[in-house]
Image (cartoon, rainbow, N blue to C red; front, side, top):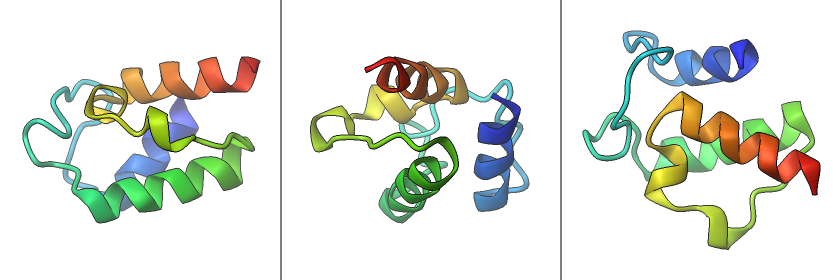
Length: 75
């Protein structure tokens, strides 16, 4: 999870991603951020995020994103 928080912090260093929720809902992450995240997650965690998983609820917090990565890593 720390590596994920590091990736997120590279996008927006002024946000406390460990506690922040509503990343999509509150407009903290935009569509370009999501594309960057998907690329970084693929590179660092060797996990492919399929199009059907690119949903606001999967990117709305670091915890939700980590749950998605963990779930996809099990497949």
